[in-house]
Amino acid sequence: MEDMRSLDRIRFIVSDMDGTLLDSRGQLPAGLFQAVECLKELGIIFAIASGRSYPTLAWQFEDCPCDITYICENGANIVKEKKKIFTHGMDRQQTMFLDRFCSEIEGIYLIFSGPDHAYVKDQTPDQIKKFIDHYYKSVICVPDAGDIPEPVCKLTIYDPIDAETHSIPRLKELKSPFRISLDGHIWANITLEGTGKEKGVAFIQGKYGISEEETMIFGDYLNDREMLKKAYYSCAMANSHPDILQECRFHIPSNDEQGVMQVLDRVLAARGVRRA
Image (cartoon, rainbow, N blue to C red; front, side, top):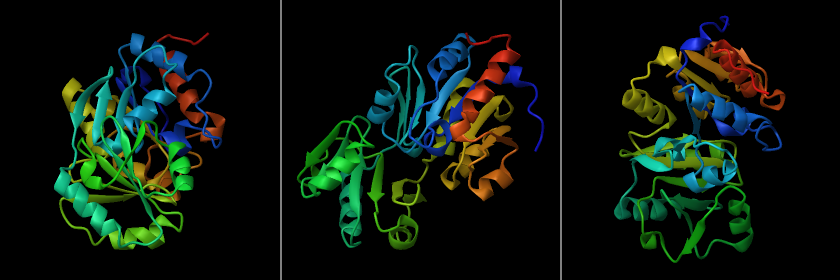
């Protein structure tokens, strides 16, 4: 692992959520909002890259005094200063096709995420709806996938059996233009090709003229792998998947040790700023 130097050149910082920024209890680290505010004053863009929807992320960060950039839905929806700057969604025919395809996989449940709302079908069991409410805000029930009134940025499969061994093998039968990703033990995602956390990072880098040498990214799991390659400062949490630890340039303390915050404070200190 290389020493972390020249932190004063950083212009863009990106963090994954689960296992990275959030601790094992799902809590944001103390002092984060103050650090984000300091970063903004220095002209540094701070972004969250997550498979979560914009309404969910906006709710989690509603107490932050300044706006955060959100690379939502695994890169299919990007929001900066509360304005959508990129959206790549499926049309109705694609959404209905995926609904029919997934209906043949027993024991899974579907969440359709649009730019503004998440949707589940009316026949979804109540206990599953309550479980989904822990992860998605602004959830609307619809009779059928064809009744969703906005483009679907991401279809999430909740697989309580095991996403990697149960649903992913079937989902891999899907061909272009769909992209399949594993997002944990019980989650799998379908987006359109041309999306991904790394695509969202690259979009912002291109839009604002930011190089990989000026970018710092935090991650912990395999779904962060391609995104982490978009930064010189690729930071793996101590609790990361072994492959991520092997591939990242820098290793930092775990999410339960507030590793991200420790590094953010080092970035601020390199610019002569110390949080109170």
